[in-house]
Length: 249
Image 1 (cartoon, rainbow, N blue to C red):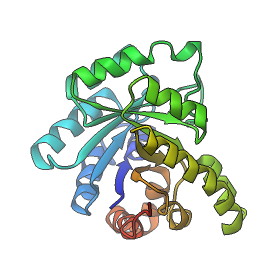
Image 2: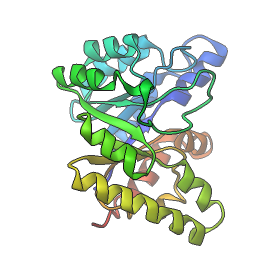
Image 3: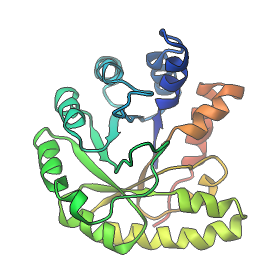
Image 4: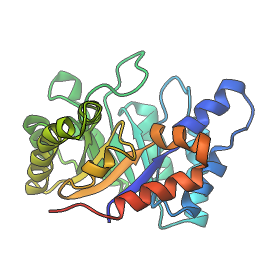
């Protein structure tokens, strides 16, 4: 079965907009876990506009104590404080993503170049702590081959182009989906696991769940947006139901 990792950043965004403790990120994690989510994702950004380092530590403690089979995934650029935080809390997975100053959300995957020169060292450091490493990449040959060459365990395919294509209808979405099928098959052939994320939702997952070799999807914004109207536990179960139909090889 394709795993769902629920990104709880938006709960922290709402909390931080007012200050104080409500809504509680830990309560959101508890609801997701009790609804059956096999993974929790956080992305602690440098500006701390949502998830904070203290949130990361608290979530790690709670999952370790109460839900040791639930995977904890920390997303972030490989800046020193993120790597130090990963060293400290030992998540199951660290997804390294490029960050553009001032961006609202991720805009593209890693591209081979001078700005990625330090990634092999970051990957080796995380491996030394027993942490699985996924690299956020576009669904294209060069970045996937590069990810394999520098020691990544998985790639997380950047799915916004697919999501945008789906807005034009299922036929448009399926045309772009074929690019992701080729990317997933290439990643698998190189020994990489396949994750995916960015703007996936209940509608476009009806197509994307067919991706060959898909291990995990990370979804936050769409889950939290729908949860405002029907409740977080209900939404997590809806997504698990869609994913339970599984990927084809």
